[in-house]
Image 1 (spheres, rainbow, N blue to C red):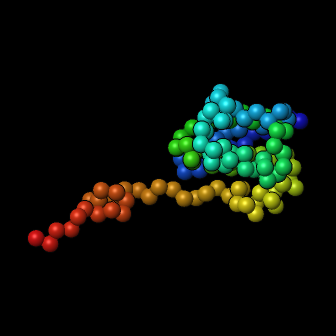
Image 2 (tube, rainbow, N blue to C red):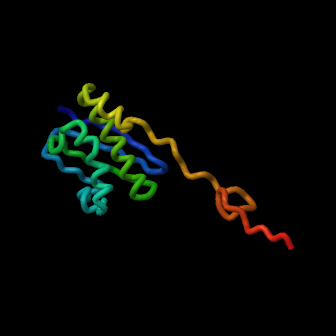
Image 3 (cartoon, one colour):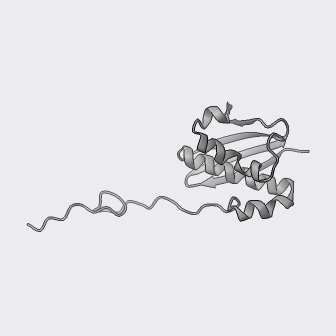
Length: 128
């Protein structure tokens, strides 16, 4: 099997992955994924598509991650892994799609407006 190359995005995070048959190693920016994502919830998010497709420990994944925060990066990686699994075997698609893992989450940070401290927050109103 050749190397499968896909991309995943979430907020401003971008995950580029290279997936091939192997022993289940996930390397992110030359570090193990458990070292990179220390929270158990983020480790679960990363391995979620592999668990749904029941292929844990079958593929080696090399990841280049940049942009965003750690949660956005974890979800971008989940998106990329889901896309790669669909390329490998189209039978995984219905299970991944029903869990919403193939959809690029469109939610982004709302921009700050002029004359306000944040996007929606206004300065305190003073009647006098």
